[in-house]
Length: 253
Image (cartoon, rainbow, N blue to C red; front, side, top):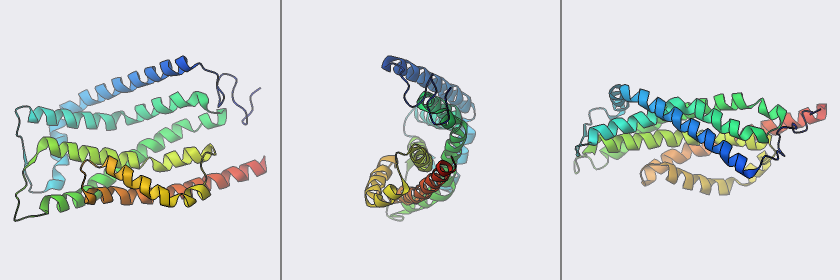
């Protein structure tokens, strides 16, 4: 009989599932996620014009242009794909954690649904924070930089690509507390270790901010880095609370 401190016979941390079966399971999860993305993107294409009008609001009076014959269609396709990804996120996260679940203990499997909901919520919070807080600041600086000397002519395709990558980057960055919680729950990281590794984390977060930002300018990178660093500090607190609760539970047992 499996206890809460031991893996289930059919799974658990020490599951003996062959490597090829792991690959087959991963392939199935990826195919389901891609199908969900295609369906969501297809539905979003119908509302693409309204979505584009909405994401143009931070621009104010700045106009967008098309310089290619396929420019408008490309813009519609890009915004549909980005929106479809946001819509399909809960299902994609569920597929991800369901793939990991055979390697978890019975007690840990109960956390899958809360983690999926938390991952989706944090991703959307990151997207909302980016659009309403960071994006207006970034656009105001980049577009009006050199105003009076250079007249900006921004294409709709480049704007959607910029906004989309920035929103997805912030959404991905906001997953840091969830990752820290899971690693702390499994005993892989500790609050003390994260605290000591802060100087290295800063360097890693700088590289991550440079990777997630759609443009290589220092301003956009710092706009991404500041929230990431704040999330790192929050993650240390979450891991500390997780470890404290775990120790209390072990003492009670």
